[in-house]
Image (cartoon, rainbow, N blue to C red; front, side, top):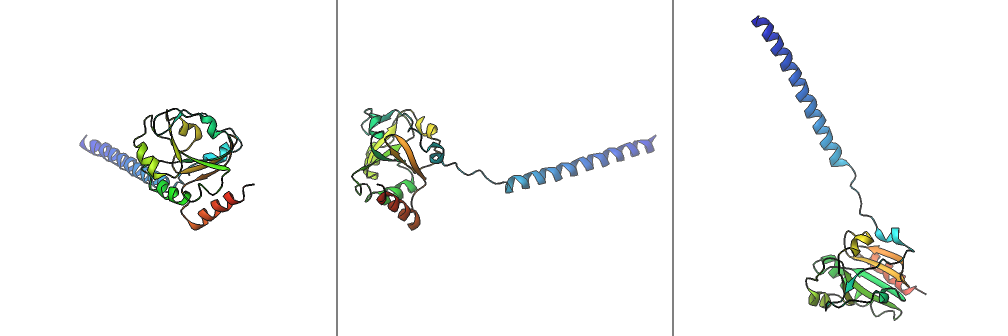
Length: 185
Protein backbone atom coordinates (compact mmCIF):
# COMPACT_ATOMS: atom_id res chain seq x y z
CA UNK A 1 0.00 0.00 0.00
CA UNK A 2 2.76 2.58 0.78
CA UNK A 3 4.29 1.90 -2.61
CA UNK A 4 1.01 2.81 -4.22
CA UNK A 5 0.82 6.12 -2.26
CA UNK A 6 4.33 7.01 -3.40
CA UNK A 7 3.31 6.38 -7.00
CA UNK A 8 0.18 8.54 -6.67
CA UNK A 9 2.13 11.29 -4.89
CA UNK A 10 4.81 11.15 -7.61
CA UNK A 11 2.20 11.50 -10.36
CA UNK A 12 0.51 14.40 -8.55
CA UNK A 13 3.88 16.10 -8.01
CA UNK A 14 4.75 15.64 -11.69
CA UNK A 15 1.41 17.07 -12.86
CA UNK A 16 1.74 19.99 -10.47
CA UNK A 17 5.27 20.71 -11.74
CA UNK A 18 4.07 20.61 -15.36
CA UNK A 19 1.17 22.94 -14.52
CA UNK A 20 3.44 25.44 -12.73
CA UNK A 21 6.00 25.39 -15.54
CA UNK A 22 3.25 25.91 -18.12
CA UNK A 23 1.76 28.76 -16.14
CA UNK A 24 5.16 30.45 -15.72
CA UNK A 25 5.87 30.05 -19.45
CA UNK A 26 2.46 31.43 -20.44
CA UNK A 27 2.67 34.33 -17.96
CA UNK A 28 6.18 35.31 -19.12
CA UNK A 29 5.16 35.24 -22.78
CA UNK A 30 2.08 37.31 -22.01
CA UNK A 31 4.16 39.94 -20.22
CA UNK A 32 6.62 40.13 -23.10
CA UNK A 33 3.88 40.50 -25.70
CA UNK A 34 2.30 43.34 -23.73
CA UNK A 35 5.65 45.08 -23.28
CA UNK A 36 6.36 45.19 -27.01
CA UNK A 37 2.80 45.75 -28.19
CA UNK A 38 2.47 49.02 -30.07
CA UNK A 39 1.00 51.76 -27.93
CA UNK A 40 -1.95 53.65 -29.39
CA UNK A 41 -1.00 57.09 -30.63
CA UNK A 42 -3.12 60.03 -29.57
CA UNK A 43 -5.62 60.79 -32.25
CA UNK A 44 -5.54 64.07 -34.06
CA UNK A 45 -8.99 65.46 -33.36
CA UNK A 46 -8.49 68.13 -35.94
CA UNK A 47 -8.37 65.60 -38.80
CA UNK A 48 -11.68 64.00 -37.86
CA UNK A 49 -13.38 67.40 -37.55
CA UNK A 50 -12.09 69.13 -40.68
CA UNK A 51 -14.87 70.86 -42.62
CA UNK A 52 -17.33 70.37 -39.75
CA UNK A 53 -18.87 73.11 -37.62
CA UNK A 54 -17.04 74.11 -34.47
CA UNK A 55 -19.02 72.48 -31.61
CA UNK A 56 -21.12 74.57 -29.27
CA UNK A 57 -19.72 75.35 -25.85
CA UNK A 58 -20.59 77.24 -22.71
CA UNK A 59 -17.67 79.63 -22.44
CA UNK A 60 -16.93 82.30 -19.88
CA UNK A 61 -14.28 85.00 -19.87
CA UNK A 62 -11.72 85.59 -17.11
CA UNK A 63 -14.34 87.54 -15.13
CA UNK A 64 -16.86 84.67 -15.25
CA UNK A 65 -19.18 86.43 -17.72
CA UNK A 66 -20.80 84.33 -20.44
CA UNK A 67 -19.21 84.68 -23.87
CA UNK A 68 -21.27 84.91 -27.02
CA UNK A 69 -19.74 82.05 -28.95
CA UNK A 70 -20.71 83.76 -32.19
CA UNK A 71 -17.33 85.53 -32.02
CA UNK A 72 -15.74 82.12 -32.67
CA UNK A 73 -18.03 81.57 -35.63
CA UNK A 74 -17.45 84.83 -37.47
CA UNK A 75 -14.50 85.36 -39.79
CA UNK A 76 -11.11 83.70 -39.47
CA UNK A 77 -10.27 82.52 -35.98
CA UNK A 78 -7.45 80.49 -34.46
CA UNK A 79 -8.53 78.85 -31.19
CA UNK A 80 -5.60 77.71 -29.06
CA UNK A 81 -6.46 75.13 -26.39
CA UNK A 82 -4.12 75.77 -23.44
CA UNK A 83 -3.77 75.46 -19.67
CA UNK A 84 -1.86 77.67 -17.25
CA UNK A 85 0.12 74.75 -15.78
CA UNK A 86 1.46 73.44 -19.10
CA UNK A 87 5.09 74.15 -20.05
CA UNK A 88 4.42 73.42 -23.72
CA UNK A 89 1.53 75.92 -23.61
CA UNK A 90 3.91 78.52 -22.22
CA UNK A 91 6.33 77.87 -25.10
CA UNK A 92 3.46 78.05 -27.57
CA UNK A 93 2.40 81.37 -26.05
CA UNK A 94 5.86 82.85 -26.55
CA UNK A 95 5.91 81.62 -30.14
CA UNK A 96 2.43 83.00 -30.93
CA UNK A 97 2.89 86.37 -29.24
CA UNK A 98 4.38 88.18 -32.26
CA UNK A 99 1.98 86.39 -34.63
CA UNK A 100 -1.24 87.48 -32.93
CA UNK A 101 -1.08 90.90 -34.52
CA UNK A 102 0.53 89.74 -37.79
CA UNK A 103 -2.78 89.47 -39.64
CA UNK A 104 -5.68 91.80 -38.90
CA UNK A 105 -8.11 89.37 -40.55
CA UNK A 106 -7.23 86.44 -38.24
CA UNK A 107 -8.26 86.61 -34.58
CA UNK A 108 -6.58 84.43 -31.93
CA UNK A 109 -8.42 83.20 -28.83
CA UNK A 110 -7.25 80.91 -26.07
CA UNK A 111 -9.51 78.29 -24.57
CA UNK A 112 -8.76 76.74 -21.19
CA UNK A 113 -10.80 73.54 -21.35
CA UNK A 114 -10.63 72.22 -17.80
CA UNK A 115 -13.03 72.88 -14.97
CA UNK A 116 -16.14 74.86 -14.25
CA UNK A 117 -14.15 77.56 -12.43
CA UNK A 118 -10.84 78.78 -13.75
CA UNK A 119 -8.02 78.18 -11.27
CA UNK A 120 -6.20 81.34 -12.10
CA UNK A 121 -7.83 83.76 -14.54
CA UNK A 122 -5.27 86.44 -13.77
CA UNK A 123 -2.41 84.03 -14.52
CA UNK A 124 -4.04 83.02 -17.80
CA UNK A 125 -4.52 86.65 -18.78
CA UNK A 126 -0.84 87.40 -18.14
CA UNK A 127 0.46 84.19 -19.68
CA UNK A 128 -1.25 84.26 -23.08
CA UNK A 129 -1.11 87.03 -25.70
CA UNK A 130 -4.73 86.58 -26.75
CA UNK A 131 -8.14 86.77 -25.13
CA UNK A 132 -8.80 83.72 -22.92
CA UNK A 133 -12.08 81.85 -22.42
CA UNK A 134 -12.85 79.00 -20.04
CA UNK A 135 -14.96 75.93 -20.78
CA UNK A 136 -17.89 76.34 -18.39
CA UNK A 137 -18.88 72.66 -18.13
CA UNK A 138 -15.67 70.84 -19.16
CA UNK A 139 -17.47 68.86 -21.84
CA UNK A 140 -16.17 70.87 -24.76
CA UNK A 141 -12.72 69.29 -24.77
CA UNK A 142 -14.31 65.83 -24.84
CA UNK A 143 -16.57 66.86 -27.71
CA UNK A 144 -13.49 67.93 -29.65
CA UNK A 145 -11.66 64.68 -28.80
CA UNK A 146 -8.67 66.56 -27.40
CA UNK A 147 -6.62 64.64 -24.85
CA UNK A 148 -3.61 66.94 -24.52
CA UNK A 149 -2.71 70.58 -24.98
CA UNK A 150 -1.70 72.79 -26.68
CA UNK A 151 -3.86 72.34 -29.75
CA UNK A 152 -4.52 75.01 -32.38
CA UNK A 153 -7.65 74.94 -34.55
CA UNK A 154 -8.27 77.30 -37.47
CA UNK A 155 -11.91 78.22 -38.12
CA UNK A 156 -13.40 80.03 -41.05
CA UNK A 157 -16.92 81.29 -40.32
CA UNK A 158 -17.33 78.59 -37.65
CA UNK A 159 -16.12 75.71 -39.82
CA UNK A 160 -12.94 73.87 -38.77
CA UNK A 161 -10.43 74.13 -41.60
CA UNK A 162 -7.12 73.05 -40.06
CA UNK A 163 -5.65 71.84 -36.78
CA UNK A 164 -2.28 71.36 -35.11
CA UNK A 165 -1.48 69.15 -32.12
CA UNK A 166 1.32 70.09 -29.74
CA UNK A 167 3.48 73.15 -29.37
CA UNK A 168 5.39 74.53 -32.35
CA UNK A 169 8.75 74.15 -30.60
CA UNK A 170 11.00 73.15 -33.49
CA UNK A 171 12.13 75.66 -36.09
CA UNK A 172 10.48 73.50 -38.76
CA UNK A 173 7.07 73.58 -37.01
CA UNK A 174 7.30 77.31 -36.36
CA UNK A 175 8.31 78.06 -39.93
CA UNK A 176 5.48 75.87 -41.23
CA UNK A 177 2.86 77.67 -39.12
CA UNK A 178 4.19 81.13 -40.05
CA UNK A 179 4.20 80.22 -43.75
CA UNK A 180 0.65 78.90 -43.47
CA UNK A 181 -0.46 82.14 -41.73
CA UNK A 182 1.28 84.32 -44.32
CA UNK A 183 -0.22 82.46 -47.27
CA UNK A 184 -3.84 82.73 -46.16
CA UNK A 185 -5.66 84.56 -48.96
